[in-house]
Structure formats: structure tokens, C-alpha cells
Image: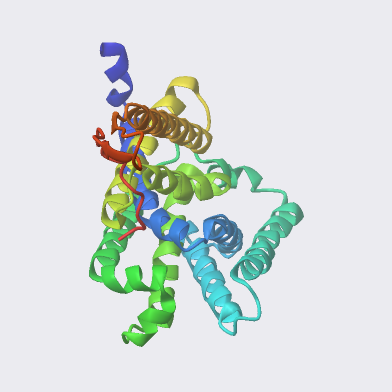
Length: 315
């Protein structure tokens, strides 16, 4: 037990664990909407755009979060604008806008060649790089995001599942989409130094997909995804320290392990339910009363078995 608790004696480790807890819960919450909207690529794209903004901000002597935040928000607004007419699909717009911003950052780095190592944490995550300022930013972003999701629960729910019906009921889906883009951008910016640009998409998607296998209820899916995200962040960060591996990679691998575990349990449960269903049907008892001089009359006494629960859509 002493060996297990030993890392908590270091301040940097406590900071990292707290940051990973908040980032995991934050990504789990936002990830539900991303998965259900079919926007799995957006987190990956915005993180790359934010990285380009961080590089630009560094060259202009701006704070890391200022440069990354401004560029990420600009990218989100451009994607919304480009896809508004419907002629260009969201995946194409994300690919064009965010890749261009990321390429700008790479071009600046390749030209200057003097601060490449400054962005290792942003690219791959760094357990040693979480500061008090990082904790404050992550905490503020987490509070803002949870607050917006709480107060915009129904508009987000309607616009996620049926935008056309949302418009009929007077919900301004354009504003809802804009608000969602803002909180998504904030979540990406807050997660960059912990998870890394290359891993943010996975931390957004895996908790939500894992939660989706566990429930058909939308509200429970939100809660499960946040819990899974928090567990993934904390567990992955601890393993990162133990094996001296980049925090982003370890968090993602740990999340993938949880996904496989839940998938295996779900597979076994489905097999057991199917076997029970087949077994119950095979034990039907039939009694027949025959009169060979008249038409056959049949009476059946059947053992009734409760059918396995039907899957329903998210409510």
C-alpha cells in the first residue's frame, strides 16, 4: 500500500491526477454529444487547429491558452460557416480548415527550429507539465462546460437527435450549434497539455462509446461517460507515472482496455440471454388429445419464458 501511495507525496503528481480527473470527466461529457452527432472527427480537427494557434501565439509572445483558444474558436466558427449552406459536409470542412491551421503551426516550427521541444507536451501530453495555471484553466473550463450542458440540456438533446423537429419547436439550432462549438473548443484547449493533441480525439470518443454499450438511456449515458472518462484519466495518469510513458498515450491505452472489457462483458451477456431464450423455447411442453375418427384437436400447455429485453433508442 505504501508503494501505491508513494507517488502522491509529490506535488506534481497530485496536480497531474487532479487535472486528469477533471479532463477525463470533461471529455466524457462532451464526447456523448460528439458520438451521437456523428462528429467523431471534430475533436481531432480542433486540437490540430489549436496547436497551430499555440505556435502562432508563441511567436507573438502570447500565452499558450490565448493563442490556442483564439485559433481553435476561429476554426470552429469557420467550420460552422462553411457547412451552413449544406453543400459542403462537416467532415470535409473540418479536414480543410483544421489541417490548414495545423500546417501553419508546423511551417512556423520548421522555419524557426528553435522551440520545437516547447510543444512536446501539447503534442503528446506531459505528466510533469501540469502547473497551477493549468489546473485553474481546466477547472474553469469544466465548470463552464457543465453549466452550459445543464442549462441547455433540452436544446442540446433536441438538436442532437432531430434538428428539424427542434426548429419546429422554436429551438434556434444555429445558436445551439455555436454554443456547442465553443464549449467543445474550450474542452480541447483545456485538455491539450494533459492528453496531447494526438490523443484528444480518443479521450473524447472512447468513454462515450463505452457508456453507449452499457445503456440506452441518454441521461444515464451522460453520467456513465463522465465516470468512465474520470476513471480513464486517473488510471491512465497513474500508469503513466509508473511506466514513465507519455500521459496521453497511457490514458488512451487504458481507455481502450476499459472499452474492450465492457465490450467483452456485453458480448457474454448477450450470448447468455440468447442461450436462455433458445433453451426456454426448447422446453415447450405439448399435450395432444387425438380422435382418429374426427379432426385432431390440440391443446397446448407451454412454459412461458420472459423474452430478453428489447433494445430501445436513446431517450
